[in-house]
Length: 141
Image 1: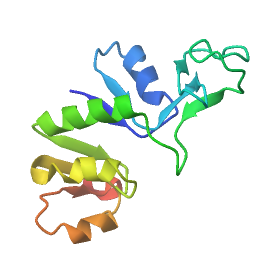
Image 2 (image 1 turned 120 degrees about the vertical axis):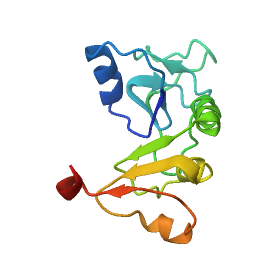
Image 3 (image 1 turned 45 degrees about the horizontal axis):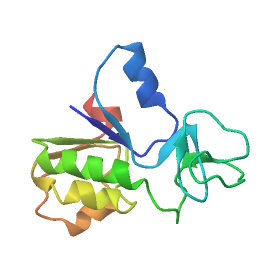
C-alpha cells in the first residue's frame, strides 16, 4: 500500500520509522522538516545558509509546505495520481475532501473508496453514485 497525505507534520514518516514499515509516503502539501528555495523551489533536508545551491541566488529559505494559494509539489502530485489511478481501493481518513485538487484525485476513483470520517463530507452530496462508507468513530468502533 501507499500513503498519500496532506499533513505536513511528518507523523506518517515517524510512524513508518517507529513500526519499521516500508511503504512510500507522498506528501502533497509538503513537509515541515524540509526547506525550499522560493525562487527555484529546490528542496533541502536541512536549512541551508542564505545561498541556494541550485539557482545560486541569495534567498530567505521557506519551510517546504504548501499554503492556500501556493502551487503544490508537482512531483508528489503526479506520483500520487499515478498510485490512485491504479489502486484497487482507497481509504480516506479524517478529511472533508474540500481541498482541490486532492479531492478530485479521490473522487475520480470512486468505485472502491472508503471514507472513515466523523461526518459525511458535504462534497459527497454531489456524488450520489459514489459507493462510500462513512464511519462515525464514536459509534462504529
